[in-house]
Image (cartoon, rainbow, N blue to C red; front, side, top):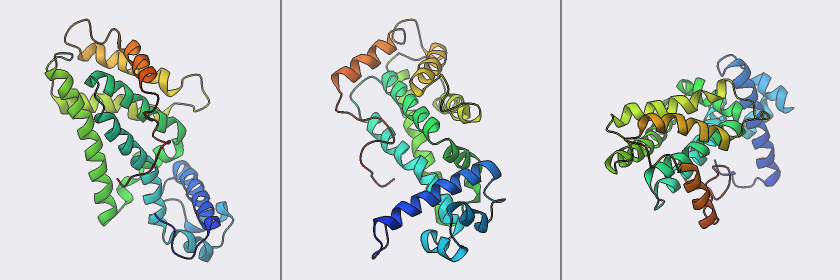
Length: 232
């Protein structure tokens, strides 16, 4: 959400702080059980001052959802356009997804549990974004099948397997733990792609292909929380 006219940079800094505090509270207590006064107290603001920055409680939920979906979808689109094989693109997308899960854990809790609290256009927009992200994964899986790297499967069912393995990570992972996004992505993809592949071969050297791609294209930023913003 752009800064309203007449507000200086301090306004946006405080607003982002409020979103952070709200994400922590919603993740711990749930959106419905968290009162606006509690959010204001966590941010050091009165109820009136809080509304000056956020407009409404639902706007906070929209912002939290956008902090997950906007950078993730931007990165997914970028990966989908790369001129490399679909299995490599799926591996890169896996790591991008896990990266944002580990680095915005409170937001992911809210994203997974409270999106149904959104109403009207806000919910429609989020579901459209989710649908686009799922479609990118399904299309990459279908490409891998068409190329002969993966066996013939129902692309939607394969996409759900891919997302279920990744999306439940937030329930147990520790951001300061021993497993980072790269390690988890390697392990997840080794498990999934071994089951998906048509025959031994293309997936066996996947990590070598990942390293080679990154060495050859250091200018391509695939970190969801780095790089410029685009409208999702």
